[in-house]
Length: 71
Image 1: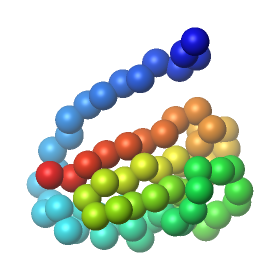
Image 2 (image 1 turned 45 degrees about the horizontal axis):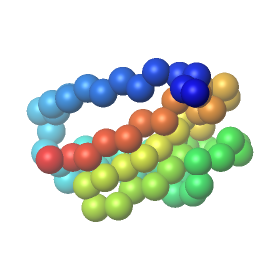
Image 3 (image 1 turned 180 degrees about the horizontal axis):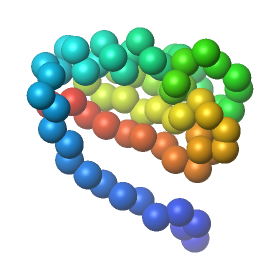
């Protein structure tokens, strides 16, 4: 049973991939997807051009997971 819908979108940036990835890394605490206090905007994992993050703000982080691949 799914409680929350999945939504998929394709977004384009005017910035180069390396700049976007650096921005994501600078604003993400590399950790498991758990709700703990953080001074960063996001928590999660980043591997090469793939990321899986949640908001560090309660309660948004427990409801929404952002996954993406930069191409």
